[in-house]
Length: 71
Image (cartoon, rainbow, N blue to C red; front, side, top):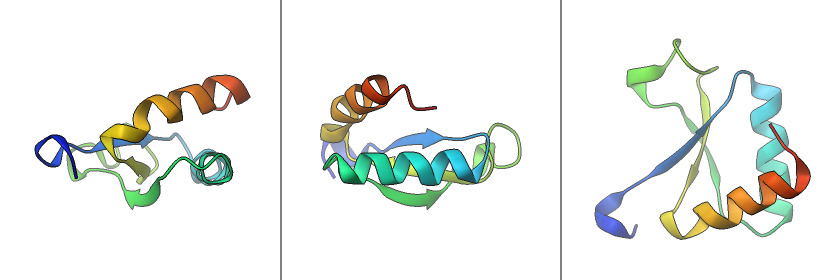
């Protein structure tokens, strides 16, 4: 990982949103992977699922999310 191991997580209210965005990003060629939400927030801010991005994929993910009006 670049930037000293920095990780970017996308969090979701439910699994359906997470799986839909994973498919959308993958189809658009944006490298991502399904991962557990960070322990510090599990059960508080998300469904427990997240998508993990490398720092160099963040802007591509933002563009893809905006272009498709994804949650």
